[in-house]
Image 1: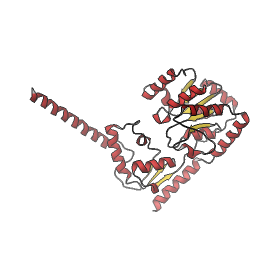
Image 2: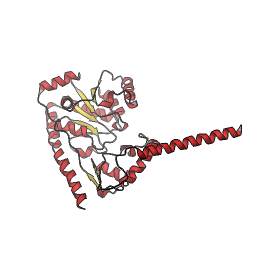
Image 3: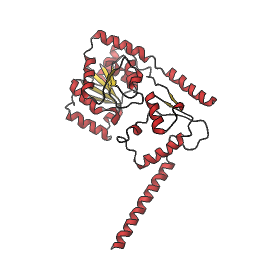
Image 4: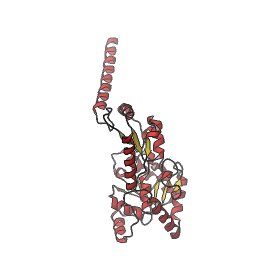
Length: 313
């Protein structure tokens, strides 16, 4: 009897070891964005390292850890890293042990589609197509933990406003976070105040930015926060997190909130809804002017400069 149990135990250990070996082999032969072998100059773009900053909320698993191990080794053969913000630069240096001197910050830009739209007929068509309420706050993004959707929804409940949520993941019930989102909307009694559009093509999304009273992005972390800049380019006020990279985009014209405080997020939302037409127009003009500092021409020029500096060394 004891011998049988012992044989069974060793058989199970053997199976587990083979499964582990198979997992390692699959990881080694599977596609990685950064191969170990170096045969030429390498410049890599890393937008953010959010899973490394918040490992408890983004568990990697065995395969993920093995893959990360090899990716980190491969990164040692990289000549330069390009990232989207100073916040990302600090975290890339700390979490990936990459020298700061070789990390270059190049801020992104909004597409030219995002602009102030004066075509009222077009805006009416967009409003009717997506059945938008007359006054609403807008969220553009996905359902990941760092987006801080829980506090955002609680803030919407407190502020007593409608919220339009744009993004493909927000309507995908195969994603556990989306199912949790739907459950929370029900628990908070917000079903009649939340409109989820799913994926929206760029032109229509620009129209929705123009129709919104404000854009809200109270994230715990953003590598850059492109919806903030898209909203600014449309002249739409932004209520956004006072931490991470978002303050790098604009220190003066974004309305900052404490992402961990639903009451504070709600307070800032209500402030925007309460702005007079004159103040709203003045803020809109400032946002549009500041957004023009960011262009894809500048992104291309700065990226080319990084490549030249590496190739000339």
